[in-house]
Image 1 (tube, rainbow, N blue to C red):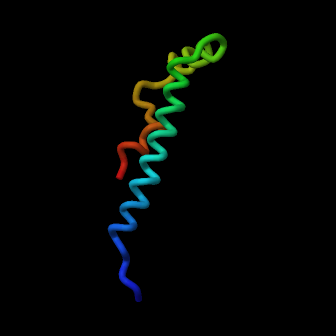
Image 2: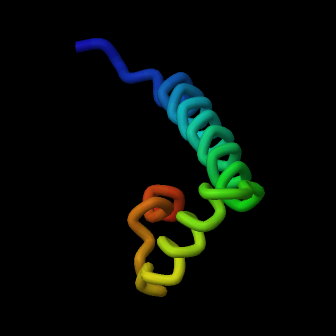
Length: 63
C-alpha cells in the first residue's frame, strides 16, 4: 500500500476551502449591496430568519 502524501492532501483541501470562501464572500457581498426588488426580498428573508440559523455558513466553522 502506498503512503498517503499528507502535505499534498492538505494543500488540495486548503485550495478547495479557500475557493469556496472566496465564492461565498462574493455572493454575500452581492446580497448586502443589492437594491430594488432584490433588496426587498433580502430584507423580508432576513427579518423572518431565526437568529441561530447558520445553515449557509456552518461549513465555514466546521473542520
